[in-house]
Image (tube, rainbow, N blue to C red; front, side, top):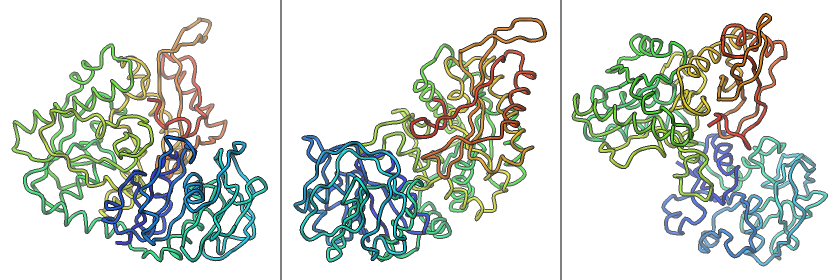
Amino acid sequence: MDKIIVLDFGSQYSHLICRRIREFSVYAELVPYNISYDELQKHNPKGVIFSGGPSSVYSSDAPMPDDKIFEMNLPLLGICYGHQLIVNKYGGRVKRANKEYGSSLLTIDNDRDLLSEVGESVRAWMSHGDEAEEIPHEFQIIGHTESAKAAAIASEEKSIYGIQFHPEVVHTEQGAEILKNFVLKVCKAKQDWTMEGFIETAVEKISKIQGNVLCGVSGGIDSTVAALLIHKAIGDRLKCVFVNNGLLRLNEEREIEEMFKENFKVNFTPINAAEKFLGKLKKVKDPEQKRKIVGEEFIHVFTEFAEENGPFKWLAQGTLYPDVIESGVSKGPAAVIKSHHNVGGLPDWLNLQVLEPLRELYKDEVRKIAKLLNVPEKLFMRHPFPGPGLAVRIIGEVTQAKLEIAKVASKIVEDELLEANLYDKVWQAYAAVGDDKAVGVVGDERRYGNIVMIRVVDSIDAMTADWTRLPHELLEKISNRITNEIEDVTWVTYTISSKPPATIEPQ
């Protein structure tokens, strides 16, 4: 399988480069910027991309790649900071400039190779504080903006390109086409990354493991697809366990049991551990602590089950690529955004080996696999639900009162989106609640009640998201239902922050 390697220099968009490349059936992988030359060679890439990043090439602590990477004679594309690295490496000069953040008009000066079939000009997304003042001798300018005369440069002889803008974000017109030009025309990579191929490879790999596998299923798409892949590979050596942690959506525990029994021929055991989880979360307010408590309690329950029903050698999980990146375990320079219960929250005393068949995938890729495995559409089109459940949608301490509000309010949001034929058109929708309260009037009485926050977002892969512009009439209907049907709620708010800077979940 042909592969493009992306070196991560800390840009918030680094992962999007991989995601965009995969959209045209070429495998791309994000690796730390300081990967060694020898380690990079093991990947046998068809091309290398340097991501953007917040640093300046002249800073004493600026992240720098292994110098030998420039000698690999592979096609190389530098984006933003990566562009400046190339300019600096080959004898050009980078200068401090006025910070430019937003859309600029990119004029195409040379429409061969990288910028072919893009047009005479496009809107390009800028996010930088440095820029190329002088380009290296063997390079030429192939694109410019009003403020950046060397917004795109090329050494066609070396197959090395630098662009000051970000083609990976949707704000850049023809950005995907520019990346496609680099990957398909310059690197000549084969389009052999398919979900059919992934299933075949994953099943072959999993079939070689020794011992029995314990898989925690939540009813969500990730854990369900992981379980079905493993079952396809090892059959009855897989045992699926569903743990009701008391933090699920309204009536979800019953729906999950019915779904597995009706649709999937796997060993399935439900466990009601709600009291244990809620007991551990009493008086805990810190979101990271809540995530880790939920993750550790899951392992306690699984370990206890394994000791009574084993032996098991493996614990399977539906970990996805974004989980790995956000938890800071991809060993890149990006900061930890939040630990995930199935990544950063695993305890040191875990005595089962972890099996993560979906670790390389984005959410939409998992949905494609679900369809290929004949998972009912109702399941694979369900909105994502966090592993720690409502613990991260309840700000502050998890109480029965707030649990009930979050469950009922979220059900109202989902029901109204279904009624409006919008549920399948948005990525995620839910209601969150915290400790803030506001005065309301019910009848002629003053009431001091909870504030509910509605969150609805559009996304492709959960790595970035934009808040959904719902019709005002629908928002009004949702608000009226929540305040009328949930006694302790007086205000309903709508969250209009996108990711970044926000995250999709509140905690």
